[in-house]
Amino acid sequence: MDANDPLLKGIEQGNFNALARAITFVENDIPPATELLRTLKVNSKIPVIGITGPPGAGKSTLVNAITAQIVKEGKKIAILAVDPTSPFNFGSLLGDRIRMSQQFNNPNVYIRSLATRGALGGISAKTIEIVDVIKAAGFDMILVETVGVGQSEVEIAGLADKTVVVLVPESGDEIQNIKSGLMEIAQGFVVNKADREGADTFANNLKKLVHQQHEYIPVFKTVADKQEGIAELCEWLLQPALIDNERKPFLLAEKAFKIIQYHRMVGIDRQKLLTELIEAMKSADFNIYRFTDNWV
Image (cartoon, rainbow, N blue to C red; front, top):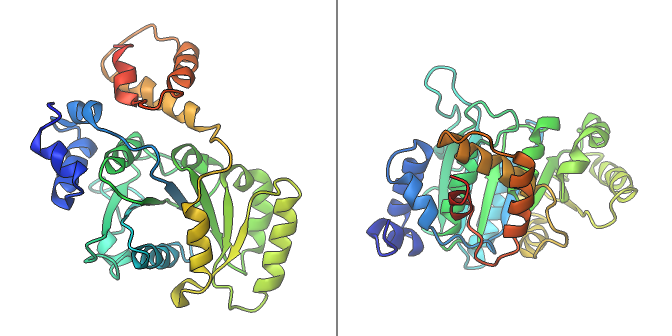
């Protein structure tokens, strides 16, 4: 695909129609998806924020509140709502129009619902590719809201620059789960619905538990439907991550292996793939699709 292709130009200019077409091509493996991915100018500096947590924590309300604050600051934001796959048509069960209706017509907000396609952690290979497409479209932030939380959810940590685990004051059982997976996922915690009884005690206990192991992980208190605590949270979300994401090379190595496997390559040394990928990532213009060309 030529760099002057109208579709590529449209994506780079932030045209939502071009972006929607490109995502549809990539999601469904429709030509010219492969060439498109190889030609994209992916901006790795755009922060990708993972929002996860148990059902009822108010993740979608929090995403709406974050979106309103980002737009208020004159920035553009993209939202990927990763939903469970329907057993009937393999599409997403929950629609973006229902969950993000307050933001749907905002010209600085792009929203897309994606199916998990059976990925236990909620992140399929297509989700990763679509995030790369959006990174070429000039947004200031990309939010990825995932399904549920648990051991399998660690995949979001490889995709996102910062992963936020959303809890509520009644989430006493979830604190215990931190020891069995959540701590590995989170770069930050949000206690939402913090106007409820027991919120301060819950947040303080969470801080003590978190800071026993990781002093740099913040705990925020928000009331998303009242926009309370959101400005402080957004300020932190837009700051560069303090530490490198150690899981990202492993996730990208898995992704690269799937691309190579798609081209029916055999005898691939996955450990060597990981080693070379880690080295290639040091380059400022690293592109996962050009990287895999050397293996096909």
